[in-house]
Amino acid sequence: MKRRIVLLSIMTLLLFSLPAYAGPASDAVLASVNKGLEVLRDPKLKADSAKEIKKEKLRLIYNQLFDDVELSKRTLARNWNNLNIEQRKEFVVLFRQVLEKAYIDRILAYTDEKIVFEREVPVSATQAEVQTKVVTASKEIPITYRVLLKEGAWKVYDVVIENVSLVLNYRTQFNDILAKNTPEQLLEILRKKVKGQ
Amino acid sequence: MKALSFPALIIFFLLSGCAHGPDTAVSPAAPAAPPQTRQVTAVPDSAKIPPEPPVKSSATETDLYGDIQGPEVDYGNTEIPGKAGGETTGEIADPLEPFNRAMYQFNDRLYFWVLKPVAQGYGKVVPETARVSVSNFFTNAAFPIRFVNCLLQANFSGAAEELGRFTVNTLWGVGGLLDPASSKEINLTKQDEDFGQTLGTYGLGQGFFINWPLLGPSSPRDTVGMVGDLFLTPSTYFSPWYAVAGIRAYEKVNSTSLKIGDYESLKEAAIDPYVAVRDAYIQYRLKKVHRQGGLSPGEKPAAPLN
Image (cartoon, rainbow over all chains, first blue to last red; front, side, top):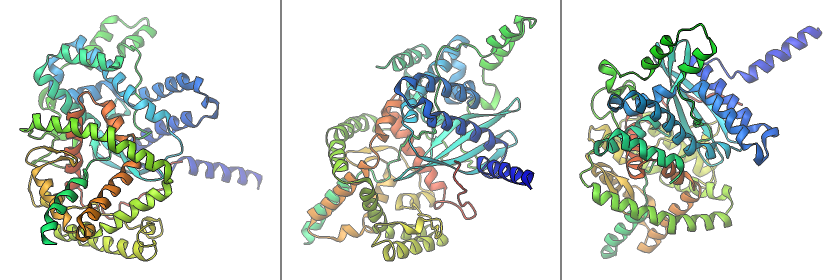
């Protein structure tokens, strides 16, 4: 009897932590999102002084979930080949920093919004879309993660917020800049952006 | 009265704000991008495993950062799966760029100098729940736009859903202040359709980009759409004209008060904010045209994650 109760409680726990089996891509994304939420909700990290620790933990989660290089490649698209290897490496690092700078405050300001998993849409054997939404008091914001299967792991290469793809949005901007500037000038613009001007 | 209706229409038109503007909300779930000069992924790996010859790590490195080969050079349509041909990418012609950029500056200042302070002041006086109710009311009142455009797009189930929502929310939602139709029990989804999208489903492209003063991002097609939708907005038929203008301005202030910070973070994240806004608008409208209604049937939301 006792064993049954234990088993039952374990099963209920499992039920609550795994909200409906959704597919391998969703599992990977949701696991990371949940880890991120845990960091944000951690009462031990509430203090302002713990901000850097929080950021560091979130960076680790980001590394697990995102494919930086793929994201950069897709953002630059045909312009990627116009950069030399050194420039590409620097671009990947800078673009990461630009994104962190743009989003970290919004993420750290997280309070009690709910994140709801909607569905997983397979695109091909190695590509899928994981659709979620963030529910706040006044609105719902659809967020889709585009993921790619690489060496056995699902990695995010694009995030679509409110129907607007991050990769496409930056691609349009970089295309526009690279039509008038050299890759080196683009990197300089990004360096300045990261430094905060 | 007739003489008044034209200026009224103009003012109304001007005050209606960027009705289709994308909610560029940036969510807390968006990526946290870690910086720190973590140089090359391959290098620390090989450093950990000494016997590995360094040749291998440089091989993976060039692989990782190598050229994009073959048809993949332009990733193009892979970003929008299942939609081949027609307007698939977020690119749009922008022959009026100098004018549009000037208008972008104008709207940007208008937002920071007028609209935002007013909306913030209003937000301090009126609690959020009340502002959400006001927004619900205006959404409910704009029912004819969504209903008629569903019909024009031959989306009859969407039209039925809209009719159901309007009935439920008007009768049981205190004239539209509440939104019981969206509750889990009733679960009728808002069909965000407008005349610009209807024209889009008929095959009319955006054409080129126009950034209107006050109204914000648009295109010839969506401008025609906005004018068409005016005829389906109940407040258009109010008189005198300044009442219409006042209602429209109030609606704008109320909705702005609920999304302060969205435009700021979009601008902050952008390398070139004008291009970012233009692209966001085009992407947002394109998806809306391609996607009929809110959700297709059988796509009902699941339980919360946590």
